[in-house]
Amino acid sequence: MHKALKLAPSLASKVPMIAAAVLEECDARDGLRDGLISDPRRCRFNPRILQCPGGDGPDCLTLGEVRALLKIYGGAVNSDQEQIYPGLSYGHEDGANGWPRWVTGSGTTPPVLFPISDEYLRSFIFGRPGTGRPDGRLPERHRSGFVPVQGERRQTPHVERLGRSCGHACSHGSILPRHGLYSR
Image 1 (cartoon, rainbow, N blue to C red):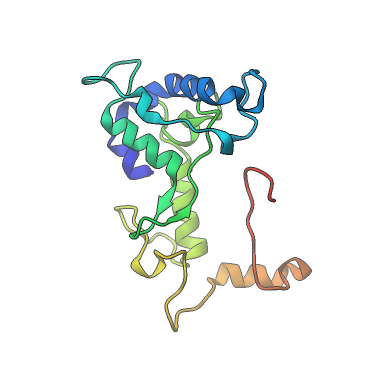
Image 2: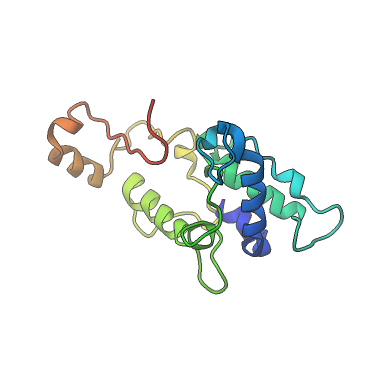
């Protein structure tokens, strides 16, 4: 996602237009046009409908911007194009806590999502703070869903410490982080 945004630097200025198009497409999916997207999983917004017929403009997207949106909404994939992490949900792209803060940045203010997620992967998942690939790709041994190669420790020291300190909640050796929509 971060790499895609670098190829579409003017996307930040078009977030209000993108948000309006997503809301127009997805708002009434729950049977009520109320300015809210109740279940983003029902949304079938296609960023290609916003592509400029030729060149660029303030009310349409370039091909690079469309591709960036497809990656943002599509999520992370491995080298076999299998999804390993979901993309962002449709809705609430604009506003004070929308994409200008978390995804695209605003003016000279960079987004806060990428430094947080990069350091999480480096420190918590891979156990190597301050390391990583500048191209944003996962190391080869982790491309198929973060499965360690034979002989490598299965958990980082951070996860091991958490496992020893969380009692019954972690008794089966798994930590299931949740965010976003409720689990089913």
